[in-house]
Image (spheres, helix red, strand yellow):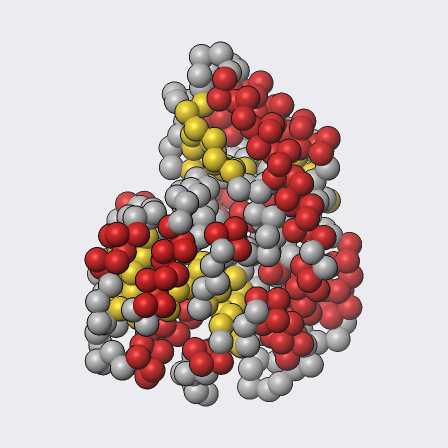
Length: 410
């Protein structure tokens, strides 16, 4: 990035320059340096305000600096923040019990990041496959979908088809079979006696909010049941109210065997993730077989419990449903803009992917930044939008209007 070409202020340029000297170049952030935020709005070091339509990839579903969640965090900070799992703490059981109830499950294995939760789900499925299903040692297979994004550990990128995620990081972990997302026949053909799980995003977020075809997830559920295979739903981005339901799987009438959760579970304050399942599945673990120093720490559990209790009321999901209807109405006219700059619009609740015809997603996001809107590109000519679920109708209308004006310059 050439800082001079972005017309940023002196303070912004200085902070970006310092970051470029000391921070590994594994991201290409937009030329803005944020210093504070509240609700749906963030402020940079120059004092300019931006409407946040990225929302931390859904980690900020409840907005920035939510007063209730911050109050919970502050109270717990004064009490106890970490014990390690060598000892019990007074927040862990409450968090696990209430999260399991929210998901209609029985047990929770808490971790920190989304990638850790996916790794945990992989280990869970393999161990279940060997101990319960009876797959011969070392032969367990997990089926994944093309275009997936589940994280960036070596094992997880082993089944990615994104060259940016895989180049120069091999050798990779075996035991994964990839089939096209949305193709139930290909999935059925790929299952064999050594298959222990199907790991799938109900809606593929990183790929640009790709919604599955009608009947697909129901067929996945049927196949997993028929073939004694675990259905593992990665709801790290799509879950916890993002789509208007507690879990995106609910839109498609399915319940997986395992939920993989993260992002919004920490309220935008702490990294909190979890694998949620039945006792028959998570009960395969014994002490020493899997763990995390910070997983299930008291601070994370207190915040996570507050998030779960808010979701239990259903108010968040109801508001997200309302926003989703408005969002779809606001986005639809983009397809008819002069010059046809938009090829497709996909949305589920207040979560959308917009495919462009000529400009890159990065170019449009830079234009939105100049207009006071934060958004993120995906895979070249796609923009992802994930407004916080507490955004006002007025702010959402304004943000989409800025997008329409920016695209109108194509």
